[in-house]
Amino acid sequence: MATSSQIPQLGPSTALVQLLSEHPELAPATWRIDRDGLLSGTVAYNAAFDVRPAMEAYADVLGAELHEQPVAVDGAERLTFHVFATWRDVQVNVWASCAAAAAGSAVAA
Image (cartoon, rainbow, N blue to C red; front, top):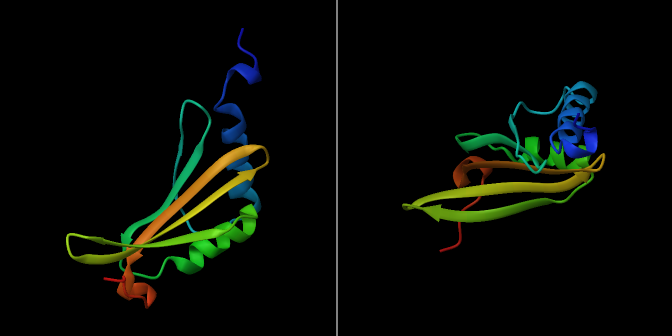
């Protein structure tokens, strides 16, 4: 019989339920738990709106810093946002991207 220490997805599953239950104000995300127990969420992929406020909310709740990175892909200027945290003993990575113009920024050439 497997114990909870032998099931790396159990802690992240519980943490995700707690996060969603305790913070319904957070933007919806697509969640994934990998086989090693990393909890990852994608809030938006190449959104046409500014995702910074949503990502700032995740950073605040998770007690982490918001990392912002400008990128240019095929001539399109974008911003990516990452929050890396340990929340309730679980490694959490939340990610989003949007058009730089939507966030009021321009990617440095």
